[in-house]
Image 1 (cartoon, rainbow, N blue to C red):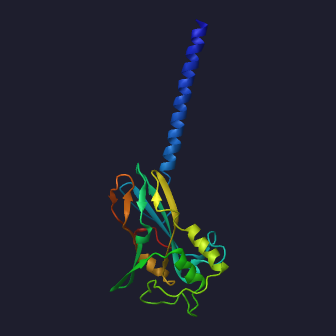
Image 2: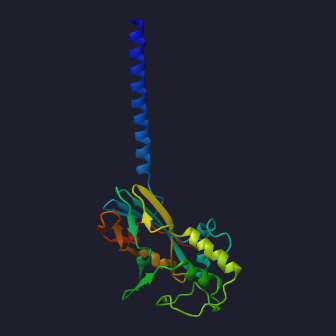
Image 3: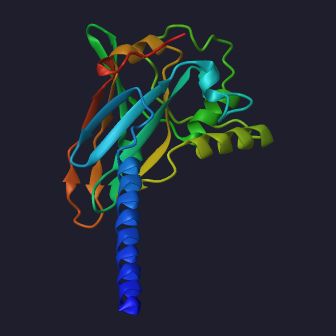
Length: 227
């Protein structure tokens, strides 16, 4: 009888341990899934959440850009955090992201995001003798032009831009991806107060179903702290 008693106690103890571990792991998983995004502006639908944090202070760039920064050339970096709570991966067309800015009451402009090449050229090769923070309306769109010599310093800064950018166009199931997207505002940081970020091209990888576009209104955020 004593042997049977000890055997039952061991089985009961094993069941208690399994249940306890299950509860503990469940709490950990829930905590990871519910972890808030580090961001200023949020929008979410269809299992995808996009957070945006505009970097409008010079010190925000120092960790990613120890020497020169995009900010010094009037370029703003938007740190995007994209969380996918779906059961399948989601693909995002990074090249179609646009920043919509209201230059005045009758003039609205759509800015394309800059590549690492564009940012490196603007910071390392732009030598027009003008203050990049001087007001210019409308903001010029990137145009093709002969590229000056790109030296070792250009290559190093170009690498910083790529490393800080969005690492991939695919966000795995139940995962989060973060990175920078760049726009040339020519130092017109106040335009961000009423800007909108348009993210139009998202698709579920397995089912190929499209996800509705995101139109993120910066005026709905907690406020953008400018210089």
